Amino acid sequence: MPTPAEIEARYPRRNLPEGAKVTRVAPSPTGFMHVGTLYAGLLCERVAHQSGGVFYLRIEDTDQKRKVDGAMELIVRSLDRYGIHADEGVDVNGNDFGSYAPYTQSVRRDIYQAYVKSLLEQGLAYPCFCAAEDLDIMRKIQEKTGVRPGYYGKYAKCRNLTDEQVLENLKAGKPFVIRFKSSGNYDKRMIIKDLVKGDLALPENDIDVVIMKGDGLPTYHFAHVVDDHLMGTTHVTRGDEWISSVPLHIQLFVALGWKAPKYAHFAPLQKTENGNKRKLSKRHDPEASLTYFWEKGYPESALIEYMLNLINASFEDWRRNNPDKDAFDFPVNFNKISNAAGALFDFVKLHSISKEVVAKMTASQVYNAVLKWASEYNKPFADRLANNKEYVTRILNVERNIGKKSRKDIVKWEDVEGDLTYFFDDLFTTTQAEKMDLLKPLSESDIQIIANEFMAVYNPADDKDAWFAHIKAIAEKHGFATDMKAFKENPSAFKGNVSDVAKVLRVLVTGRDKTPDLYEIMQILGPEKVKSRLSF
RNA sequence: GACCCUAUCAUCUAACGGUUAGGAUACAGCCCUCUCAAGGCUGGUAUACGGGUUCGAAUCCCGUUAGGGUCGCCA
Image (tube, rainbow, N blue to C red; front, top):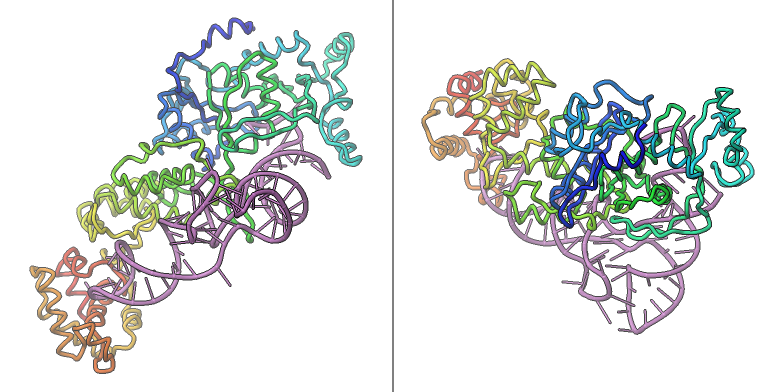
């Protein structure tokens, strides 16, 4: 086992310029990627890199029971996918890169143990032989008698075992854990400076927490302190469920003679249910998992922009003033994180952001993204896309005026297939009856006449104005208003207006009464398809 | 039960003792218009409640209520 001095020598203090921040994201390999991990990762990555510092990835796998195969890969790929790249950490195969390796806690066992040993020697820690059942009973008694539950003060039974007693237990082969011998006074408060929450007055920790478990691995508390010291983390960013542990963590830093990092605790993402807000839960909420967003095909940049918006509300203004900049250029600020009570994960807002993001993409960018999505989640659709690249790209280009007033109707890649149905004969399944239903007030013979007359004059070579002139002419001939103002002033004088005539063509050609620009649709479909759909 | 945190439109939030309480999203209406979008314009009973402090409170203090969190050999 190395000595603390040897370890310190192996992990020297980082030599970084003034103000450079070192942050990390530290997920557990449970096989579940929570959106909150992306949120934290994005925040930390931005803060570190915008300050000229270091962002690293650490795998917190001290709970071997929850470890899942392939989880490492999921973590790395997830972050990668959203453009969050660590300077140090592990790769998809779990291999380390960076000079503070290893970055997987279970591999750092001897490091933690060296420090545990040192605390033991200083009398700042002790072995505890209490069984889980004994602790349960103790807790129940405490609850019943109304005392604060926990292993502290007179309830810390193993705290004052003599060397002989300890030796005896060890000889008997009794399992044990190592506890920190706390000198804190619960009735005293300590001021904790938090970058997000401000100053907090928290009671000192007086609980003799477990720092090393029966399996020889550290608990989160101990691993956090040892790793963030050795790896030189300057800013610890994590969920605010950790706030009440900060006094303990500070205590541990002091006991080990180290300087504690700065802390930034953010509130977890919430959702509403039955009128109440609650934490997004991995058990109950599919949208808590990043895989949900992959399955639906939310553009990565949309989720990133949405998260930035939650991190700092000023992102919106920044985006409006910098429409063409990369979202990663947005300066993220700890102090402006104000989701004090926990922000609701708002899909309506995400959708609005996503529409903007997609509207800024070119048709071929959209095509590629949809194809990539479909290859994984909708194979038949992927084949169709691959076999009709130019055709689909043309379709996606309808009313796509980059930088100008572009259509904003695609939220996520999943939506695209449904918008394409009437461009393919085998997907175009609207029946004659359904069409007539959509055109309801008009009679079938009226519809037939309009269709026939349009077919007679339809020329694919016409430009849009000429095309529309035909529709107007038909409208006029049959008593439909061509002047909207005139129609509005006296609707009863007309059979309808031009839009009703256009609607006939729209429904016959597409099977829908709401579509993008009909002229462009006809151009893309080509005269053959247009004619066959207009004929009865 | 103890301790901690939080409370502004439906939602995310701005305001850090002086604003007609601002913006975005959503919603509604109007305009534009071959439909739908997009775009433009307009709109709405927001400072949880009750006390203080102050010339002046969303902002500071106290209490109430409501939410969230922690009290594990899980992180």
